[in-house]
Length: 92
Image (cartoon, rainbow, N blue to C red; front, side):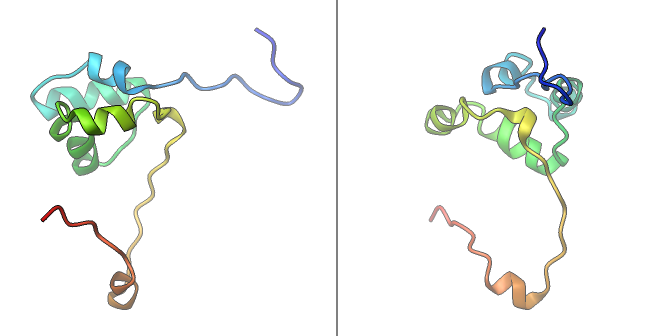
């Protein structure tokens, strides 16, 4: 494998199909399988993305090309003023 000078090996590409190939209806089973791939999502986010949307064809069409190995999560506390500026899409 050729690496540019000063660079390390690239992380494995983690696509939707790889994560869904490990799917289990129980999030407690599916989460450790995802973490073994290198997905370090908070439990509630992981459950929404990879369990609740498992059969949503529209979401799969968009999400299947995202390389999950490049996604990083960061928890941030927001003040009530900052929360007023956050837009939350509402499905109703």
